[in-house]
Image 1 (cartoon, rainbow, N blue to C red):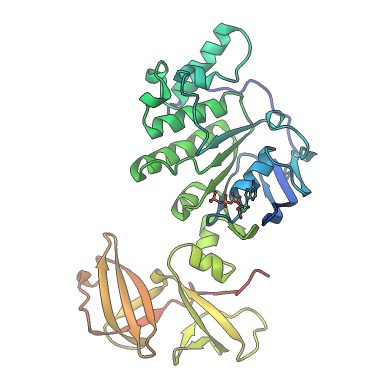
Image 2: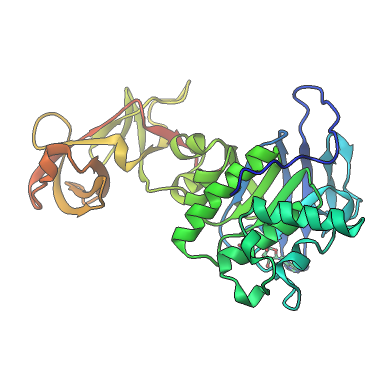
Length: 365
Ligand SMILES: Nc1ncnc2c1ncn2[C@@H]1O[C@H](COP(=O)(O)OP(=O)(O)OP(=O)(O)O)[C@@H](O)[C@H]1O
């Protein structure tokens, strides 16, 4: 989006360092048949981009609506700069919203949609609409009606409308889900650059793990109304706390076995991994090996198997290895490695990287 000069109309008070811009404290919301959000707590630092990620029905939208003020929690509080805003109307929270289903007004032009909530003298409103249209790169289209726009263009208008009130926060609920993959990737990069430039604190909802990892400073993985883990994309991917998070994000080889010196014994071999402190010998554990955490060789020391499948994915080869126990392990190797030649049906050995594997808990602690 355009790098136009976009200045905030109000000065922000200086904050004590470390005070969260937004804090959600023990928020719960139940409907007749379901607890949609259950004792959720998290914080957003000023300017931070946090994504709520989870399957359909896990409570993402409800949580966003509670933050926005469209729904009231049964218990818990929402704090903005330390001030309790739980009872405040949405319009008074200094938050802008973009929802997947937040349809534009069909009988209003782009300019009228963007300026819908603007007040003040006409000339100032028109200047502001122009500025916002330039910001999201729809300035040539301001005279059009929504049905004359592509899906991506409509979401740009929705974004400009959300920014019109100069919000401190942007809340977005699956804003890209109606768009095709190429537009989605382009628009999300632009969105991130835009909120960074404006210094807006952003809470984003998606069920798309790739989108969450690509966009966010931190990702909150939700399951059944709770946040199961919140952390940087690298943390969530490389150090998932639970089995659920490990399987929800990326591809995982989960090895269940018993603690022995140097790792976990399973499938008749020892899988090298650092054990948590004070692990009792013989304790049941689950180790996670991502596909790229496993080296592969034609012979030598390692875990023996048969190469069953090899799929060319461009940068990587995805290899399926069958162990003597019958267990199938997925391995990703750079496709340039070994000349990219992996004979199917041949004997191979797996070489797990002990520095990369982690132990995951069955349930959140
Ligand atoms: N207004 C409502 N009345 C009754 N139950 C509701 C209401 N809104 C949500 N729920 C229930 O609360 C739970 C969480 O719903 P929510 O829409 O927050 O999930 P979600 O993670 O956003 O799902 P999706 O990705 O499908 O939008 C679901 O079981 C849902 O059926």
